[in-house]
Image 1 (cartoon, rainbow, N blue to C red):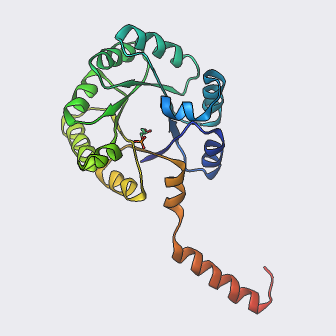
Image 2 (cartoon, protein in one colour; image 1 turned 180 degrees about the vertical axis):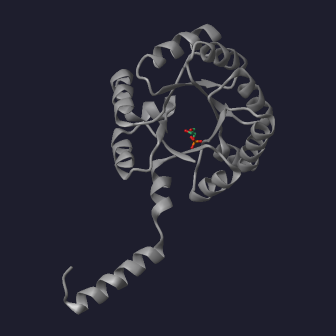
Image 3 (tube, rainbow, N blue to C red; image 1 turned 90 degrees about the vertical axis):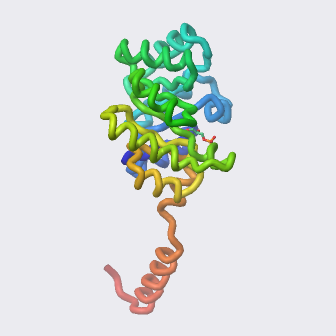
Length: 216
Ligand code: G3P
């Protein structure tokens, strides 16, 4: 399973890539807006920092606009994956862009039927938003499990990118469900590596070593 960071923060991305466990990044218009920087230089910098796929989202809502913006985003760097929302026009845009060899991450997926159509349209990634389903008292992980099963049984090659991840349990359950990618905020990535017993154990080792008075 690949780990992506869900951020447009250059400092978070540099730190994540330096850790050696970050395979790519997803952005969206809200995350870009948080950075308060001109769009083009920001995303060019992100594409240069991150070795893997960088999802950049269109903001047009009509088919022609999504295709035009998608083609422009695609030309920013070879690792760009165009993000299109899961609407009627978004599905048409996926089919069109995919036909031109442009990889698309279809975003804002909240149902198995949407995911089925997206795979038929040829999406490279499907992004079910599980945290936002949890927010409205639906079990977001059930959707991730359903999509993974449908794609496996039907032989679709679209990769399941579990998004709207809010905590480490989401990451564990998405991995168990067979998601190909999990994209998470930097804070969740930090939570994944922390354990109080690791900290306590290390303190005890170092205290005992200090009492010995030796050197390596
Ligand atoms: O990748 C999608 C993600 O950015 C949405 O997350 O926490 O805003 O629901 P959230």
